Image (cartoon, rainbow, N blue to C red; front, side, top):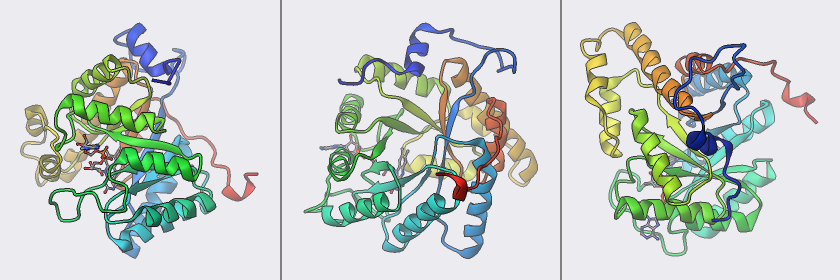
Length: 318
Ligand SMILES: Cc1cc2nc3c(=O)[nH]c(=O)nc-3n(C[C@H](O)[C@H](O)[C@H](O)COP(=O)(O)OP(=O)(O)OC[C@H]3O[C@@H](n4cnc5c(N)ncnc54)[C@H](O)[C@@H]3O)c2cc1C
């Protein structure tokens, strides 16, 4: 591997304290770096919700914000429009998700070039899934897997590239080892960071980090955090992507089906507890799946010690 020296979070995981108290203003704690994921909206109303979310989280000065990419042509156009507007109208650094599904290399390369032209410098490179489910078959003349896409993007321009990682192993991987080999291929092809799928037990992520380190992976493996307030929906979605939902989570939401306010409070406690355990284990970078709703994420960021700074209007930036 060419990633030396090891980045700070991993070094701290190996050498630092295993547990730390809540961050105190005078405790010398550095606030963690955050990033936020949004999805491109389908309607005008949802678009307003997204922009409310972006504006609310912008003062937290995330390292980057990412926008997901769907398989259909209209979702892709919405991703492009949202990312371009973030470049034009905010102080945020956007990362555009890009997938291999249903497109030729030429088509994907053209999208990447268009991103570079409007000032996008960061891509989250993914294989993607077949719309409506079903087995994935690489398209002739396309990029077969995310590692191929990473290599292709690096030929187009010197993008910063993030890729996906799976603490509970990707559902179609031949084995946990094969999945780690794949992650290594993506990093070796030019990605500089992996973002994990969400998980509920901090232990799941920390053990995955141990396995990455043992496999010689030293690039940052940023935990993906999904604050969950709708347990039934989370169960359904998690089942479809091979994420285990621990019994304790179900117990915490038991009897709250009709009690939206309490569910949100429980959600904040659960996610805050999760990030606090990770922070106490030396993790100082977090990626939040916002679902275009800012309040839970804002509260959890606050608990982590991230406070708003002044937002400099985009037009005044040189
Ligand atoms: C942070 C994050 C963001 C995401 N954003 C989006 C999004 O915006 N849009 C979207 O559609 N989906 C998104 N996804 C979902 C993702 O597209 C799916 O999980 C998809 O099934 C795998 O994508 P990948 O990039 O991990 O694929 P890959 O890294 O290519 O791996 C996919 C599977 O193929 C296997 N594999 C890899 N190379 C080979 C090979 N040469 N031969 C055989 N098997 C191989 C791997 O082990 C793995 O099981 C996201 C996932 C994450 C974690």
